[in-house]
Image 1 (cartoon, rainbow, N blue to C red):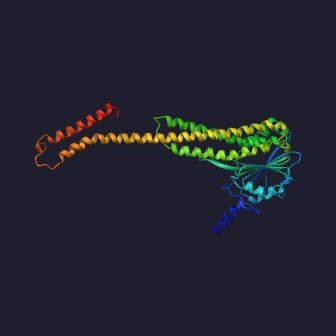
Image 2 (image 1 turned 30 degrees about the vertical axis):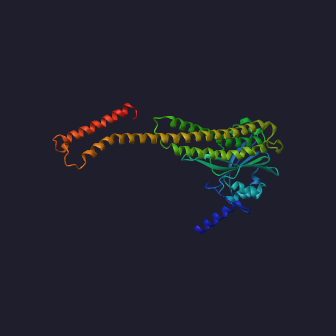
Length: 358
C-alpha cells in the first residue's frame, strides 16, 4: 500500500509535464459530486447528477441555461472526461486539476475557460486557498470547485429570485454572478484583514495593553493578504480579455457590471497594498515596543543594582580580616550595621525617585 501511494505521488509530480492523463494534486479530500441547475424565463430546476452517467452532454438542454457544478476534484478521471466531452484540450484539464495554477482567461473554439483562485476561512479561522475553474459555452457553464461548500449559494438565490431578470438574460449574466460571488468573497476577506490590522495598531499604541501574541498575529495577517494579492493580481491582468464583446458572452448591456467587477479587483489590490504598508508600520512599532519594554526591564534591574552597591561596599568593609575592628566587639554592632544598610538603601531609593530615575 505504501508503495502504491509513493508511485501515485510521483505521478502527481509529473502533472507539470505534458501527459495524456493528469491527476488532482491538491490536499482537499472532497468526493467529486455533480449538480445540475437548468432554468429559463418560466422554469427553474436543480438536481444532483450521477457521476457514472454515460454522457453528460446529453443532460444539457438546448432550450435552457445549464449550470453544471463539479464539487470536488479528487475524481481526476471524471474531470478529464468532462473536459474532453465538452471540447476542452487535455492541457486545460491539467489546469483545472492543478490548485494554485496561475489565473488565466482563454477563449477558443467557442469556449471560454476561466481559471482562478480564491480563499476561505476554515474551522480554525485560518485563510486557506481554493482553486476554481469556470467553463463557459453557448448556453452552458461548468464550475469546478475543490470543496462541496455553499460558496455559490448567493447565485442559486439570485436565479431563484430572478435577480436582474437573470432568467431572461443570456449566459453572460450568470457568468457575472459567479465571478461577482468569487470577487466579493475576496473583498470581504481583505476588508476583514485591514480591520484586524487596524485593531492591532490600536493595541500597539495602548501603553496599558500587555500586547501578547502580537507578533504571530501580524505574521498571520501578512500571509493572508499576500495570499489574496497573489490570487487577485493575475486575474486583474487577465480581466480585459473578458471585456471583449465579440465573444458573444459579454454583451454590450453587461459591460457596466463587468467594469464593476474590474473595479472590485482594483479595490482588492489597493487594499492589499494598504495592508502591506500597515504591516510594515506595525512591525516597526512592535520592535520599538519590545525595545521599550526591554529598556524598562533593564531600568528596574539597574535600580536594584544601584541600591545594593553601597550595601555591598559596607559589607565589604566589615568583612575585611583586620584584627582590630571596634564594631565587631560592640554589643549593638550587628543591629547598627543593619540599620545603616537599611537607611542607606532607603536613602538611595528616595534619591533616585526624586530625580525621576524610577
